[in-house]
Amino acid sequence: MRHIRLGVNIDHVATVRNARGVTYPDPVRAAEIAIAAGADGITAHLREDRRHIRDADIRALKDRIIKPLNFEMAATDEMLAIALATKPHGVCLVPEKRTEVTTEGGLDVVGGQAHLAPFIARLADAGIRVSLFIDPDLAQLDMARVLGAPVVELHTGAYAEHLDDTDQFDRLALAAAHTRALGLECHAGHGLTVANVAPIAGLSEVVEINIGHFLIGEAIMVGLAQAVRDMKDEIARGARGAA
Image (cartoon, rainbow, N blue to C red; front, side, top):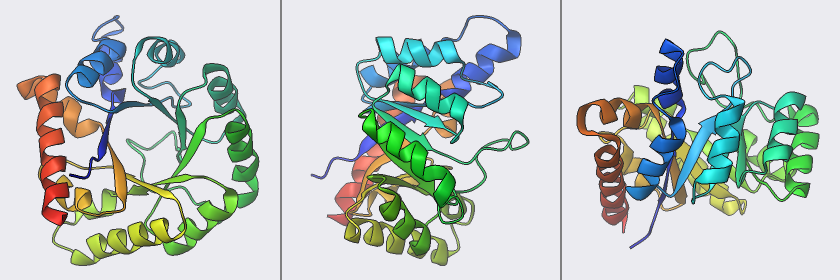
């Protein structure tokens, strides 16, 4: 059976910690629990305003977890310096606005080509896998290939918010197929839950799914390890259904 990797985003463990200004709950401990339950990697977004993950968290994750660290970041000189110093397994370049609650859309790699090119090159030269978080748009995918990023993560937010709109899923399916045709690795994420992840897992091109908010919320109800196991089971069910 086709195996789809699950990356667990632990940002909102840090959100809870920071709400009280204490040292717990510890995002690194959460990452270790998620890995023990079957997570294939850990994602963490170091935002410019440090609203959840902090610099020390990134260093500790890199030092202590036994699975790949996917470091989400905006394309800024500050974040590039941190990535080059930390050397995570991968960096996912994402758009970032201080006023947004969560990432609102994909990165505009067409409009940002000149700005993004040196960041991608520097990261690649350092041996860091680069992915671009983009909307399921064919022109954006074409530019990702031009820029030399080996991985794209398709923004699934519109699909997750409009499950009754089959056009949203069709856009993702077309984009995933185009990603493979371009020779790029296809990931997916944003707004995914156990109720909507199976069709995404059913896309044969998708090799990794990154999920955070749902898993941390579900952990309050059933525990993080169980939430991860349930998600892994549902992803596997989706992959089987497409076989």
